Image 1 (cartoon, helix red, strand yellow):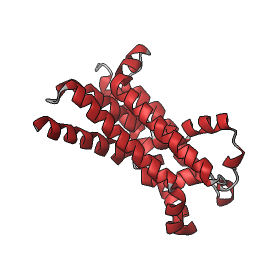
Image 2 (cartoon, rainbow, N blue to C red):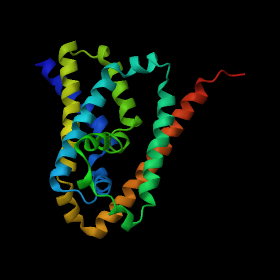
Image 3 (cartoon, rainbow, N blue to C red):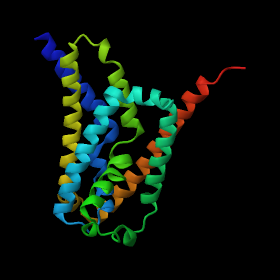
Image 4 (cartoon, one colour):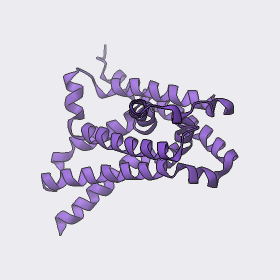
Amino acid sequence: MTQIVLAFKVVFLVFAALASIMNPPANVPIFLASTAGSSPDVRKALSWRIALNVFLILVVSMFVGSYILDFFGLSLPIVQVGGGLLIMSFGWTFLHQREEDAAAPSATTWRPEELATRAFYPLTLPLTVGPGSMSIAIALGANTSQSELYLVAQIVAMITGVALVALSIYLCYRFAEPIARVLGRTGTSVVLRLSAFIALCIGVQIIWNGLTALIRAMPKQ
């Protein structure tokens, strides 16, 4: 019984930690702007691909992310700085995008292979998954051995938490159009600007976190 309670706590911890920083509902207007002119079938396919990409990226980051960084000789602060710049650029672009530009691209013209590519970049990375969520996943994975939960149960619980995050992303993106209809055109535009501004601020914060860690790691004279 204790192991079941601990497993539920791990699932909730993983879901809450990742969902709080990824905030799928806030990404809905940006997702709609990025897929302007697309059909419901295209958005449905994109939603599924993005959710699957998010699940795979977070699971890989959680269990082998630290080893990948070590292999390439990269530190987490460096990843934060690089990823923060990418998110900041992405937020800046949408913050200054004109209404007529937002309606220009037509996703209905994407070929199947192009659909998979665009589903990964920029819709999965950095729109949905960024260095912030990846660093949290790496940190959660690094603490796996410190839990009182059995290792197999710990892994299953963590994967379940990630799956719930991916499911929430799929639902938000899959039903993005009904959400936009509730908000209305003006409300969607306002939320889009606010989401872009928040993404810009998140990028700056992530860059600052990385730079702060790098400065602290410098040898003192």
